[in-house]
Length: 199
Image 1 (cartoon, helix red, strand yellow):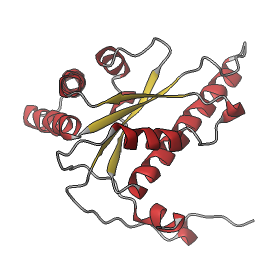
Image 2 (cartoon, rainbow, N blue to C red; image 1 turned 90 degrees about the vertical axis):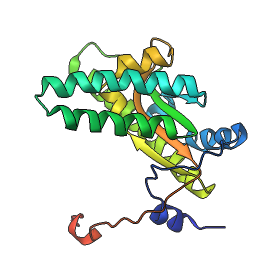
Image 3 (cartoon, one colour; image 1 turned 45 degrees about the horizontal axis):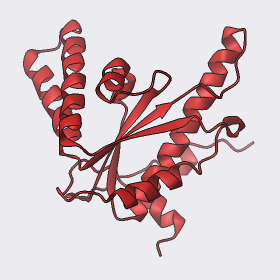
């Protein structure tokens, strides 16, 4: 049994996977770990859309790629760079045996008449969903799986919502690619002494 510190320090963002499918029971155990994350008011604002069907992955990747191209063209990026970026995104999404779209709902969160508190309530929900995502990533690593958190849905929420037929109140926050690793990666961290204030 790997201890928690090892799981945290050894986890990597894996972007290349073997073609082997991830059993539904394994995905279910990852989602079970995710929902035990702490959440604001214990409202549990996370929602998950699991994608394993090739056709849905291709539809999602194509829709996201179309919007990515439009945005980069509006930025004046070189066409070759645009196509390389879109191709890389398409390959990462479609080559993963499973995808988990991490979504947020405000349905059970508190409501306020003013913008300041409403914005903070929304940020609390975002943080809650992110905590669930971290639980999922750590559980995936502990189960021998690779995973990678993609923030792209924040830039193309309408395309993700349409491609996955999400309920109206589900707001896409991230896309986690998942599978058995076909690569190994190393990473470093800055010394904690550079990042902490003790008072």
